[in-house]
Image (tube, rainbow, N blue to C red; front, side):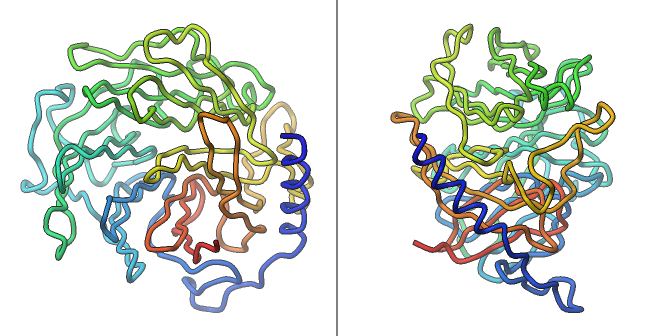
Length: 359
């Protein structure tokens, strides 16, 4: 890994040496490296609906909710609007009598699991009006029309706990990360202190419970293993991917540090386990993330970005794509690959970025 580390450092520093030129008066005009799908406020996470051109985007701002993106035209459309035909209650998600208020719906992490041909379950971290995991049915059997979305119910997070990412097992068990548990802060995990955890709720359980041993410095992105044997969680403060067995989480199976970038979300993209995030040591921002007067900076300075693939069996990273700071797109947090293009989400931007995937 040392040689790979040095190579990545060289590539990333070279990529960060030059800033793309500013955009034209068209606020959705492309930059030197990206075209954009605009109108998606803080699309912190992305999910690709399999075998379709459609991408789901979260909205990490009050009322931003869910968007559906047509990758062929880069058009962004509000998706959940709270209509009667978008509600179909499911007793497996019993905690909320009413769907999220579209005016408040603040969507963060996403998880999409296929349930039948042309059908999937979408789990969404919500901060708008309640701290919860919202469940939706996605129907994409008719390829000629936009997929149909119906709210099924929600699972409420424990009091005082704010979820970050969500995933599930095939039996319906839901797991979610908490970045900072009550009494901890972002500054704490930047300093390497354990602040978060992974919480689990089985189909027959009435509440989430903390999985012992999963407390890490800033529990962030989350994904389950393909065979349901465990899960992968990102410790944002230490830039690590940490693997756990499902049946015993008291000690990690393994942990590996990402080279020279700060992975945020982690998702299966077909057979690939993709991670996306910002450059760790960004010259344009004075280097690594700083703590000023006891507070971690908000990383508003535009950093370079990285998308990487992790092979769980060998625990090796391979570079998928990277780029320098962009003048209108910062805070890279998620990636999907659709139709030969790389699509990037952001917890800061007002758009989704896209570029051809270079082999």
